[in-house]
Length: 67
View 1 (cartoon, rainbow, N blue to C red):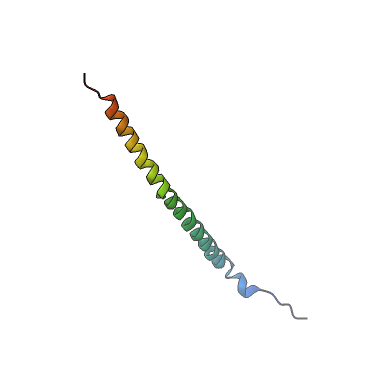
View 2: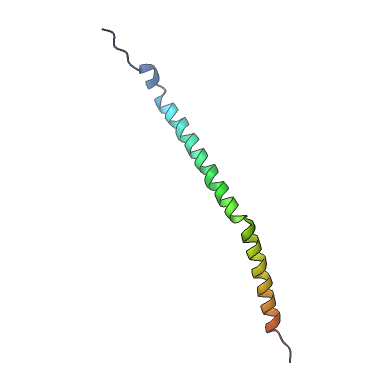
């Protein structure tokens, strides 16, 4: 009987594992970084920041009344 083994693939196992882990890490890093970017640069955050600045400047002007 002839035994069939996968000795040819065994030498590549470490290399293929590293390539697979690199691809997975690259995918997740792109996903996480793009998510953080879109959260920080969303339109609603910019609008909220603008209204907060307008409200705070209006409050400061109202508080500085000269007698």
